Image (cartoon, rainbow, N blue to C red):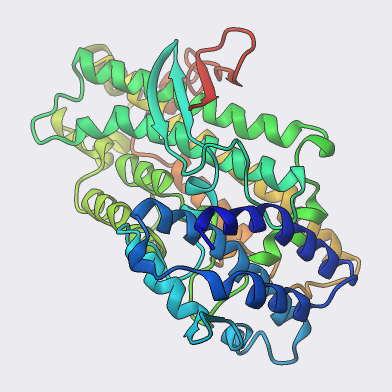
Length: 437
């Protein structure tokens, strides 16, 4: 069986089987049997694959592994405590354990992919290439591995596909933001000059578009997004463990969001340790780039140092001092707007988390229904609770230039209005997302 045939099976047969099992119209054993008979005996030796073929097969086997793991743990006594038992009977070619083959396949991609499904394979590799245009110019392109226009999912429902697409569109915009900001990390970069101001202004427009993307998704009717019950009880439950100590896929593993946090700063003690705990599930290049940013001063701190200030000076300065600083260095206004928009994006993400996860679960708790799901709905899949996400949002609001807020608020309330973002064809907008290829 060639990888393309495995892909056809994952696109068409796997969602059918998952849906049947979830509705008690088939047993988990049927899924294991079909995988064992139709897929595993025919998988090629990993060394015979190109790197791209290996990446595509990682995507497909990731969906298979997640499906088998979920159904086993939900239906097998003690399955949660021993998740690796789900794979005991899955042998590639009749002799290679599934997880051993998957790990070898992941290594053969040359990307440092994790030994189970991950954010990279579920979102970035799975969804087609997304191109970001800013005022008509392409400013970023986030590649995908498939050019068939289809999105792989667990149950084949439009809601799942929309969610995967939303996450990838968001990451594409984040990549564009970082492309504007990262050149400013250079040792001799002038953070108040014309080029820096242009980069900061464009990054702010893009972040505004990201916020609009998230807010608009949250405001859509249920039929055009994914209802909370589907998100909580179906979609999230496929993020079950493969081994008791692994890292399930999560939006927290979005590398572009992590990069932006370390470029702009997050006033949350231990945030770097939290990020490092996620490193095994990131790709090698992502780990290296994020680690490098961790070791650099944030851009706002470098800005203040270049102006002869620090955060303590900012807090102790009176309104007159701050106005004189702005008059001498108007670029500070651009930086303030960027950091304010960074915080507003965090607030939009928190809003979606509350709408689709935390508020519905709280209603269940109040009704005495509890949280009996395989993957808890009281926290993200990497353990981030509502309280912690609220704390992170407040930390981003307490940014390095927050002392300027009383001076700038009357004239510049948190920066310019959010720009609209559109996908494909439609009315003119500063930021356009389009499929490439």
